[in-house]
Amino acid sequence: MTKNVTLIATSAMGLESIVAREVKQLGYDTRTENGKVIFEAPISAIARTNLWLRVADRVKLQVGQFTAKTFDELFEGTKALPWEQFIPEDGKFPVSGKSIKSTLHSVPDCQKIVKKAMAERLKQKHGVASRMPESGAMYKIEVALLKDEVTLTIDTSGSGLHKRGYRIGQGEAPLKETLAAALVQLTNWRPDEPLYDPFCGSGTILIEAALIGQNIAPGFNRSFASEDWSWMKQKLWDEAFEEAEDLAHYDQTFDMIGSDIDHKLIGIAKENALEAGLGDLIEWKQMRAEDLVIKKNNGYIITNPPYGERIGKDKDIYRLYQIFGQIMNANPSWSSYILTAFNDFERAYGEKPTKKRKLFNGFIETTYYQYFGKKI
Image (cartoon, rainbow, N blue to C red; front, side, top):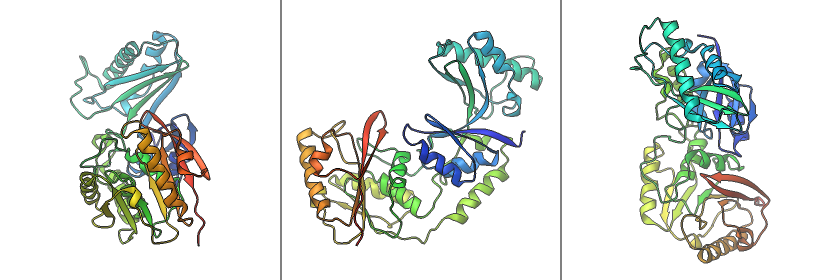
């Protein structure tokens, strides 16, 4: 096994800079492309990045990269790569794929060619006479073609990194945990400052904020595909988990309130917070956002209100934002960060944002409106 590997942390569009910052905080140099952050690192980084990256979708190991305009070039380029370093004799290696602006545009054909080339290489290197048994650990392969450039990777994560393991239930339009973590990291909020979410749904934003505030590794309570890989020694995982335990600040308390008009969602939020190990650190209330009363100074609102794409009607949404804007304008020391796809948001809210940023909530293009309060 080589000492260093090339890893790719994949990302939703618009969040690459946050993922790159997280990777750099772990001590690895990065380069960024659309939808991914690439870095060279020791194999121990597979465990550390899967445990710590809050905003990345998954971590992939890049086995190789080459140009291919014909199926022969794809076959030979794939066969030339050192698959035996990563996949043992009994390893399962299903192949998925995608092709963008490439001569080889048939994804199923590309998958078959890659699978065949890998099997020939692995049989030769492992001394297997017949078919590869594929009865052991999972090594999910992806062949990605972009403008005839082929990138072959192995998924180290398994389930997407947004699956933290704490979400017992969710509402009709749930926010991914990775996006919720990004919304928090795009603010200046600190753990000792008040933080409210008046449209909390199943509680994801505040739970992610609390995990950030206590510096709890987001992957601490889940497993990863690469834990089953023989060359990823248990010692590497033990060290990564020990590091995460040592860096956690479990004694950090919060002034956090999550509220929602739906009492069932409040019940789900409470259960999710308990499952995340946060106990009673967050206060949950059934309440209309229009009834929000702010009694403190210098706090933060981070929220993902309904915006009519999936739930609610435009007229009702407009009036809701109008009242909410009036509440926040009456509390100028508070900063508010609001993710919405509602086109008339600024007019309804009654104020232009300090900053705004385009983000995607699933396939919905949204804007993250950022209003900076004046501290007193």
